[in-house]
Amino acid sequence: MATKKRLTKLKCKDCGRVNYYSNKPKALKEEKLSLKKFCRWCKKHIEHKEKKK
Ligand SMILES: [Zn+2]
Image (cartoon, rainbow, N blue to C red; front, side):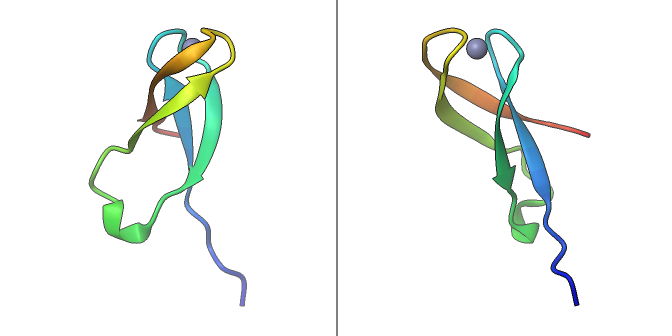
């Protein structure tokens, strides 16, 4: 049986590029994921927000 992964795109708040992918736990289904990550386009750490498919 294959494991279904919930791959979530994380989009830079500044430039809007998708820089990261995250496996979102099922428990967080209703919540919007938001992580502070490094954006190589903005060359700084910035908030990355979850993007819907
Ligand atoms: Zn950026």
